[in-house]
Length: 222
Ligand SMILES: *Cc1c(COP(=O)(O)O)cnc(C)c1O
Image (cartoon, rainbow, N blue to C red; front, side, top):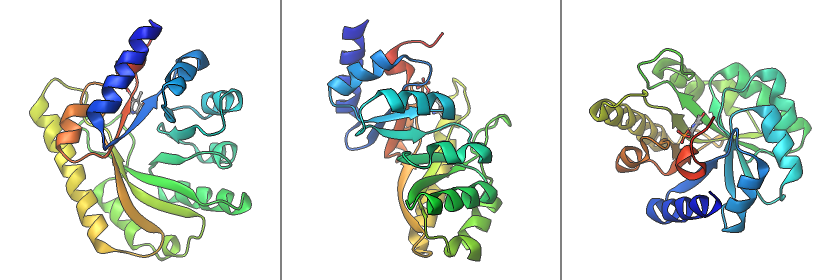
């Protein structure tokens, strides 16, 4: 099992370069993270605040923790001191809370805006109009403790590759447009987080530069 983890991870690190590989360690024990860490992996993703805090406490300080799951405003305070990148900013209200808590912590917190690109309506994220509201917001332009580094999205869970491809292409086009606008100092658009175990190849073809992969590294989740 542990040899499998090592070869899965090494192959992916190689195949995905220069994109950043975020190893999604949710539900897997700290031992699995330590094995990945031992062969150089530093970026890890978690979808639950409590689990990320518990693991961060037990593991080396130079791990870069990515919060990839839905984030409730009342939980921002628990991660603001150490989180490396929040992928799942899906409202202006949440961004305002991150700004407030980051100011208290005297940090700048890196964020991605999560865009809803899937057909399923269960997945969180901004629509194009809400994205535009954040881009144009004078309130956002004044923020001193958040950096908006790019976009994140999840494609529909389907075998239809053409659909997944078109959803990723759509997100890439939003990313390119936002990047070209050079809005203000709060925006430093450079990260496009898309692709998981089942669709990372399509995501990379469509211009992703950060993929979030769990089961293809650590094995099937229970
Ligand atoms: C769980 C999860 C992943 C990784 O999923 P795998 O299919 O295990 O690669 C990626 N992104 C998000 C937001 C997730 O919740």
